[in-house]
Length: 113
Length: 112
Image (cartoon, rainbow over all chains, first blue to last red; front, side, top):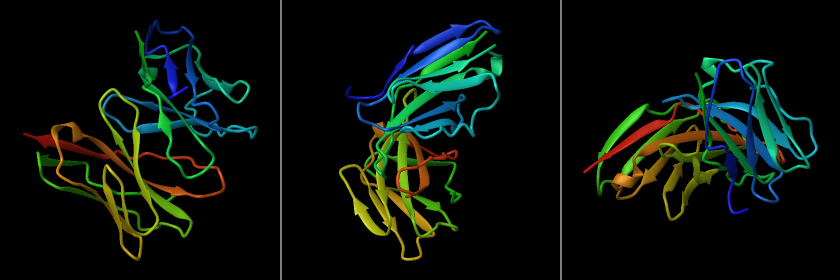
């Protein structure tokens, strides 16, 4: 597609429920990244996928967070047993495997009540 | 990864030139300097990238001195729509693996 698409754009969930956030990267982009941004804060790196290499999961805050990327394209970020501190905007980005810039999606705003 | 330091916030007025300076004292030989812009409720957007001297595009100019320990993003004749957070990042070219670590950025407010 023309840009990075994320769904849903907004998600309200009850504490303790599981949620899945989806990212459709730009076609042909081999690298895909997940970040989260709390209100008024900078971006926090979560996880990175590059081609067929093992993902860099160094930013995942706990084992409740996981992500997968199927067929080198679509990615799903799953948060299990959500907590109120998980409330944030979750941003996905994709890029080619070079120095050209990342393209970010508009994010999913997650609210845990 | 090289650490970057930039002002937390800046104020300007429409029509003025804005210069945001970022320091990256421990930049390495293979590192590139990259700037992103983020508007409220949107993901960051790539603005400009450079290695040394000066780079200019339709949005901004990037000035990098010979020692590369700092860089300056220059926005000519800003308008209200340039109000955003600007992030300075140092990106290591490693043949495909590029993990961007964002700092707090500089919050630019442009006033009428």
